[in-house]
Length: 89
Image 1 (cartoon, rainbow, N blue to C red):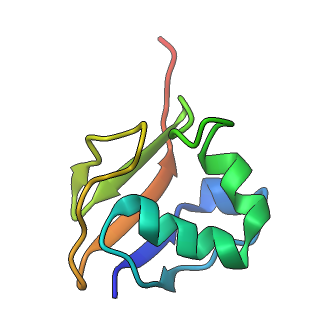
Image 2 (cartoon, rainbow, N blue to C red):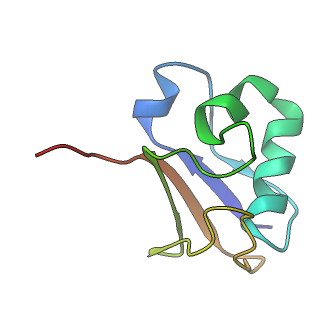
């Protein structure tokens, strides 16, 4: 099963330990995490279900391409990393 890991920056606001969940896409894997921890969804996704501007998701060391519908495919041994993106100048 894919493993979803949240960086410590997000864990400052809400408990989000790494989880192995079922899912064939990033969206399905995150939905499984959010089913057990609904408050976490607000920190990762906006009201439309898209990835928030200052959040980045990596799948196996590559940035997720679909930030709107989270349709990037994941394998059973994939690692999904959710982290706060840095911005500014």
